[in-house]
Image (cartoon, rainbow, N blue to C red; front, top):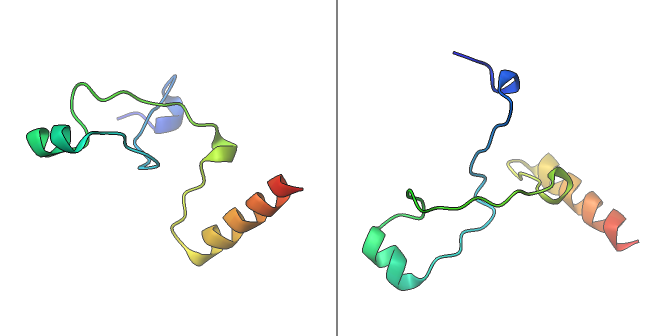
Amino acid sequence: MKRRQDNEQFYRLNGAMYLVSRRWLLEHQTLVNSSTLGYMMRADRSIDIDSYADFKFAGLMMEEQAD
């Protein structure tokens, strides 16, 4: 098994956004299948908020961008 860092490129779902019609979702019963397309997000535009510290950091980043 290789470490993620040893791969040339690595993509993963981050749950930031899903665009799907209600009809499609009801028909397929999932958000992800073989027709799912990815969207490359810049690291500075994608902050995972899993804790209060992450939330505070995201707030500081937003304040910095507003300046």
